[in-house]
Image 1 (cartoon, rainbow, N blue to C red):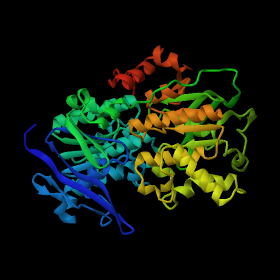
Image 2 (cartoon, rainbow, N blue to C red):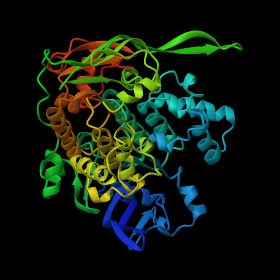
Image 3 (cartoon, helix red, strand yellow):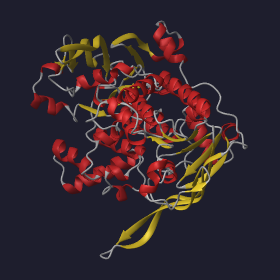
Image 4 (cartoon, helix red, strand yellow):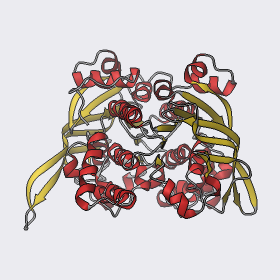
Amino acid sequence: MTNQPLLTIKDLSVAFTQGGRETLAVDRISFDIKKGETVALVGESGSGKSVSALSILKLLPYPAASHPSGEILMNGQNLLQVNDNEMRKVRGNAVSMIFQEPMTSLNPLHSVEKQISEILKIHRGMSDTQARERVLELLNQVGIRDPEKRLSSYPHQLSGGQRQRVMIAMALANEPDLLIADEPTTALDVTVQAQILELLKDLQRQQGMAMLFITHDLGIVRKFSDRVCVMTGGKIVEQGPVADIFDHPKHDYTKHLLAAEPKGDPPVTDTRKPIVVQADDLKVWFPVKRGLLRKTVDHIKAVDGIDVTVREGQTLGIVGESGSGKTTLGLAILRMISSTGRIAFKGKDIEGNSWKEMRPLRRDMQIVFQDPFGALSPRMSVADIVGEGLQVHFPGISAEERDRRVAQALEEVGLDASTRHRYPHEFSGGQRQRISIARAMVLEPKFVMLDEPTSALDMSVQAQVVDLLRDLQRAHGLAYLFISHDLKVVRALANEVIVMRQGKVVESGPAEQIFDTPQTDYTKALMAAAFRLETAPEGVVSI
C-alpha cells in the first residue's frame, strides 16, 4: 500500500433539481482511498452513501443531478470533467461497481454467460472460447455451484444470493483498480457472506485492488475495512481508522449506529393458540426436461416433504443458505406456485383452490418481497401502491378514508406520510422496503410471509422494523412466516425455527434450542458465521 491516493474526493456536493426546486443530497464531503485499501462508507438509508459512489462513475441521472462543488480525482484526473468516451474507458476497467439490487441491474433477457462475457469481449477483445473459460473461472471464484449448468440461466432462474454473486463476477471480470461495492452481501446468507468477503480480500491482496465498501452492517465493516467514513444527512460526520471509530466514537450519530441492533424477545410459544396456516408433506418439484420431445428426465426438488405450522400471534422463522428453498416454501404456502401436499388456512384446505378462489383470501394472506424495487411499480405513486389493495378488497370506502389509511400505514413503518405522492425511484432502498411493508400491513392481514424484509435496511431501521412487526403482531394476533439469512433478526422475532438445506429440513424446533444448542453441523456453521462472522468449516456448507 502506497501513500499516494488512488482516488481523492474533495469537497464534493450532489444536488437534484425537480420542479424547479434543488435538493442537496451530498454536502461537501472529502475522503481518499489508497491502492490496496478498503474504505467503508456507512450510514442510514438516504444519508448519501450510494449517491456519492455513483458520482465517481458519473452514473447519476444527469442533468437532473449536478455537482455544485468538488472534484473526484482518479490517478490525478478529475472524473467530473471527462467526456463520455473517456468515461467509458474508466468504467469496467479502472473502476467497477457491484450494485445493491441485482435483479434490477441484470438484464432479464440475457443469460449469465452473455452478460459476463460481454464485458470481456468489449474491454479485452476476448474470443467466445476465451470468454467462456474466464466466465467459468469467475463463477467458480464467487462460489456458484455447478457453473457450467448456470451459463445458460437467466436472472429470474437464480436465487437472490446467486444473482448477487453473478454481479460480483461481472465487476471483477477486468480486475479493476477500484471496486465500489454497494451493499454487496445484502442478499447473501451468512455463510456465503463470510466466504464472499474473504474472496474479495484475497483478490484485493493478489491484485492490489482498492475498495469503497458501502454497507449498513457494522459487523462487516469492523472485520473487513481499514478506514471508515460515517455519513448522515449528506455529510461525513466522522472518519478514521476502523479501530478508532469503533472503540472511541466521538460523534453522537456514530454512537447511535454502533448501539443499534434488533432487540427484544420473540413471542412466547403457545400451542393453545389456533393454527392459522398448516402444511403437511409439502413438495415443490420442478421438472428437468431434455431431448427433442422434452421428456422429463429428472426433478429439482426445491421443497421436498416439509411440514409447517404457524399459529396466531406466533412467528416461524425459516433460515438456510441461498437456494435452499426458503422462498419457494413460502410461495407454495401462499398458493403462488404449484405444489403437492396439504395446505390449510384457518382450518380449511386450500391446496386445490384455483387462482380465482384464492383471491378473497389474499387480504388475509399478505407477502413482503425481498426485492423492494422490483416489487413496486415505477409508474405508480406510493399512495397508489399502498392503497391498491384497499381499492381491491374494500371497494366501498371513500377516497378520503383510503388516503387516511395509507397515510397511517406509512407513518407506522417510519415514513413521512407527506411523501406518499412521490414515486419509488425517489426513495432509498431501505425506504422502498418500508413502503412494501406498509402495502402489506394496510389490509390488516391474519398471516404475513416476510421474505428478507430487513435485508435492505440499515441497522437502526432494522431495529425499528423488528419492533414495528412485533407491535403489530401483539396488537392484531398476526401469524408470521419470517424468511431471512439475518439470524440476529430471526432470533429477535421467531419463537420457532426451521433450518433448510437443498429443499429439506435439516433441523427444527424452538428458536432458543436452535440458536443455543444446535444439533447438526450445518446449523452450527450457520450460527458461527452469523454471530462471529467466521467462515464456516470447509465441507460443512456448500454454495
